[in-house]
Amino acid sequence: MTLKLYSHPLSSFCQKVLIALYENGTPFEAKMVNFGDEASRSEFVSVWPMAKIPVLVDGKRDQVVPETSIIIEYLDQHYPGRCRLIAADPDLARQTRLRDRFFDLYVHMQMQKIVGDRLRPEDKRDLFGVAEARRLLSTALELIDESMAGKEWAMGEDFTMADCAAAPALWYANEAQPFADTHPNTFDYLERLKARPSFSRALREAEPYLHLFPR
Ligand SMILES: N[C@@H](CCC(=O)N[C@@H](CS)C(=O)NCC(=O)O)C(=O)O
Image (cartoon, rainbow, N blue to C red):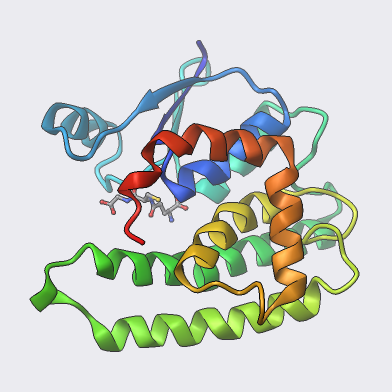
């Protein structure tokens, strides 16, 4: 198989790339990374020393591609399918990248801070950092709620990289800080994302591991 994705089904950032792959039916081999297993971890670290999943390895083009947004750009450029995830128009492409950055930095990373803190030993918790993450997440949800009024997807009619970023970020954020009652447009958007076959498949594949998620 030309494309290999180092990943784990429970990982929210991996789901972002899985959505892109499933949208276009792009063939790839999933290589499961288990950070709790020394052999699996050290094999992965030899591929990408930053030890963050997912990472795409393209055997045909001899490329190691880390970072979700860069992986999706790479797939769009070298393995395009029926669903173009970044528009050809430079202005639309920039707006897509801005929304993608927004979901990653102000929803996804803040959700990870809140959830990650639950996995720390009691005496190593970061109350101040978590409060700041909750504040940033709340502000982000306000802006998303305004921008999603009357819109189907983050960029309007077309499903793009921004929606790949939004889906797992909002799904896990809603677990960490439920927003059905406070941000109805965002919640409706999340429901549409969940119904999208690419994301519903990623969620189904994560199900066997969901008990590991600290609620
Ligand atoms: N900016 C990175 C973030 C990737 C990331 O944070 N991945 C998490 C899994 S969702 C990870 O590898 N965590 C392992 C660790 O921090 O030890 C991207 O977009 O790919």
